Image (cartoon, rainbow, N blue to C red):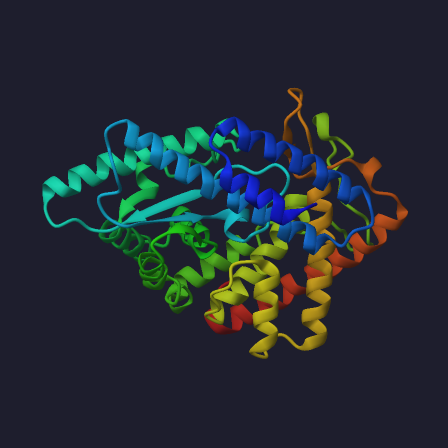
Length: 357
């Protein structure tokens, strides 16, 4: 895959159809690479660099479209963030939109009204444009067209303070979403101020830390005591493995919480593992083992993307058992045993520090 050439094509694209064509060609190429014996990390890194470039180009075209509507330019600086797998730089062939937007405060109510109108229109245009090139909106509505996720910095700070003050399950879930936030475009200083408001405080609240642990341990790995893999028993996915929620998400959750506890700013899972190694929170052997296990899971998660009835790529996270031969199952089982051990270690450490179950 000629990454440099693809990036040039994306940056020079003037229409959404051109971007969609590029994305579909990239999906085909990456799918072919996965069937060959390529290392997964370079593939994921290149794929996510292309995702980033596509989304940034959509933002530029959306600004131009918004200007044609009569809203000529952003009235104040703004920062556009990705959450979820986009924030972690771990998007697959099929990826939805998880995003937020923060913009600067205005000097008076008239400016504030103008800014709300501009960014409301821009957010809607971004979402519609990304959908047009193949990124469906987040099912949970964590997206810039939702006014709750497109706010001035002062309103965002008040919202986050309320989440800290009332650590309900939903509010803690939102704080965990913010922990994966990655600035993709816009004003870097505004982005730093926004993340700096909350990122260092999350683990200083015992109630929130306990709730975060509960959330982190909610998804169990799909391996039994005797080494058997747990498969789906019913429905159209019967016999398949839920790689997303039974392998990938448990590992994401573990290293997110460990990184938050250590005040590590990295958002990618492998970046968090490396940072934990560098500060001595993970030994070299443990970090190598964890990184190896995550790479196994990452590859299988990519393989869990498939075409839907319309021919578009979709990512259910379910891997058909036929895809896993004996050679694939052995490393998966080893990776899952590592993940299960890490879950238990994390639970014990967090209980010693914060109490709880």
